[in-house]
Image (tube, rainbow, N blue to C red; front, side, top):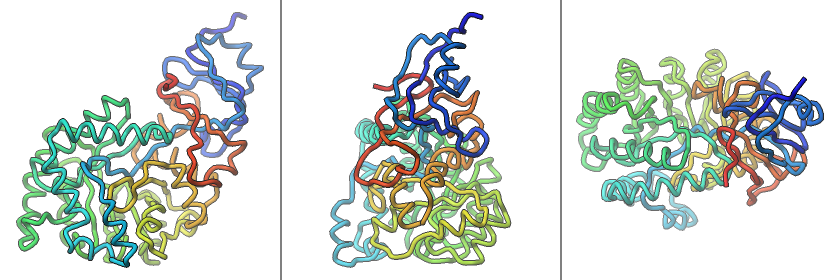
Length: 406
């Protein structure tokens, strides 16, 4: 029997983590054809069945699915490094906002930036993410907070993703914060969000989901209910920020509104955890680099959530003010230390867990037959080393759609 032709043979892996049946399966090689995984197994057996056009030597490294970053804020024009010094002085998040920093600082810069300059910046953000193994991501707007600037942000994000070959699942986050011009009349901004922004984004087809920040100093539960109901009416999926600093009912509302996920959860109550566990559908978005970056001692109850059977993912929350990292391997370290998750739980949370939260678990986040051939070679001897070191990038080879990235 003659070997079948195929696009690529990845071989000499220390092991291959596939998740194709929901658990870790180990092998030392896999076959890719037409951008899809077609077989995983022992190199000696696969070579007898397949004739590859090209080969990739994994050098004994760990082969894993490409990372899916399911919570990213890539559309910002300027960093907020000065605020990092303010935090060293003990200035809290909400006080920074009162000083003119925080989200509203990013809003001013995004509004002022030309599309050309903003596109160059966002492309650079996607390149940084790719170098650290992200092969697909969810990306949010949220630093425009006007009809014009939110549409500009979503447009630029799509253009940057296409230019960099980054599969993007866009989320509209016009409800990130009340802009300065509407701080004294929040009802007016709610009207703009529900009757102008959401319909305009839907008409242009440039976001699949809508998000809102439910928090003291941002949007309360009553305002969030109106926004989420309108978004669902227009056909958006929901992804929600809640319980980051204060528990004001955001998680329970997310479950009630059948949101895809509710993210942060550092202030999650027992009632919120119970609601998530009983739902079994709304994902917990765990962002462990955020409390580290903000110098907080409180963390999301990651281990409790996992033990309760709550579906979850791990993400960077890459943004200029509260988590300035594009690196999911760095997230893995902090998840292991601060959330008490295992290496396997971390890897799952940023591959198949993240993909499932976005409704793309059939094709991304795993390396089972038929999956998109997005994979990484990590310079690690085994899975236990994932997240063990920090301050390093273990990604040595990246394959997207069956094509080895240079």
